[in-house]
Amino acid sequence: MACWERDWWQKRHCECTWTKAALWLAFLLLTGGLIAPFAVVKPPTATAGYAFLTRFELSPSPNSTAKPPPLQLLSYNATVHIALRNPNLYRGISYLALAAFSFNGTRFDDESSAAGVVDLYLDAQEEKTVRLEVGGVDRKLPAAGAAEFARQKEAGWFEVEVRLDAVVQYDMARKTWCPLDIICPLRLQLVDSDVAAIAFNKTKCTILRVKISGC
Image (tube, rainbow, N blue to C red; front, side):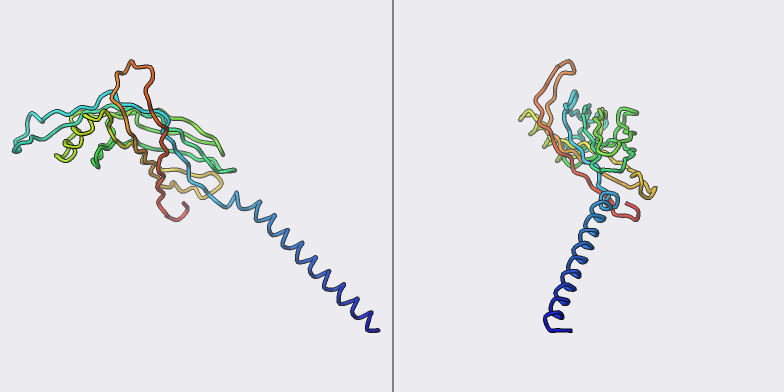
């Protein structure tokens, strides 16, 4: 083989090798892009879009034998609208959740029945708004909480937290029910139940996932 023929063949062979490599790389990127949406499971998102208090009051315990200040009891009623969204492209999400309420670090599990329970299904990329009504009567509040209540009452706003203790199940994945906490810190006004509208800033809720097998 002449020298110029050998150089031409080597150049041609090199071009073919690079072409094959480019085609394989394009194939891998394409298949990876198609598989990734199925392989990755994203947790839901949540936003509190509207919320208010219709009752939030303290009263001394009539049976308290403690030294002053006496034990304080909190009674409350809150309504919260939470938008739940499924960000997954191809997976639906099933929810089972129970609402809880807290103030100044003291948690009160909801005493209501169906009004504080969430049972719903979201298709891929679907969003639904759930209305929660949580309430409690004569719930024990520590002294630090009572002092913070007085301060916030004077300011005209109450900083509370509504959370959903949930389990979720993702379609097209393992049939595991995965623990999930949705925590919504809220700054609420005490209003009359007949008030048509109040000022409220939408609040993004925090999602806490438990890392266990299948979740």
